[in-house]
Length: 142
Ligand code: DQA
Image (cartoon, rainbow, N blue to C red; front, side, top):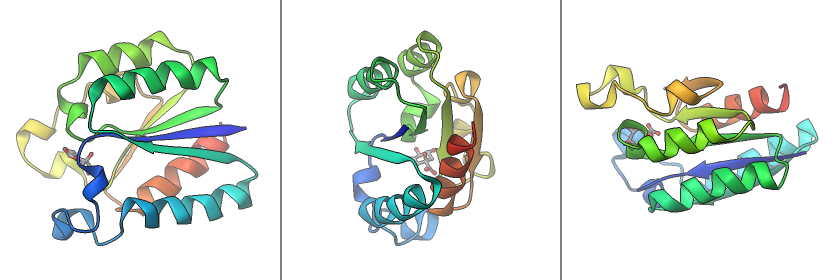
């Protein structure tokens, strides 16, 4: 089984981007650790990042078309703005798990609304890079 791990805008700069909020791990560091965990769980991960909203929409459609077991989605700031991503999630039956490194509810009020959460199977937020690993455990167990 394959689990898509989709990352949205600015997450390519993890490691140097506001490390006091997002930690010092790069997205590649997170991918390496997820690969290890995936091997233990007997699943395969397909990890991607884009700064473009439409790519995330296309990849959600692709996840279903390719028969992915689940999607782990950190939509970055699109979480708080994108009805298109929300609708894409609603358009597929593949379960989507929302993840965030930080806890958006403990931050600025503009981060308190999540269009992703409304269409997600569940949300894991606030545990830094560990959020991804917890989401992978959840995805593998679905
Ligand atoms: C984030 C939280 C979002 O509010 C923010 O726009 C991000 C990262 C997180 O992983 O903590 O880009 O999704």
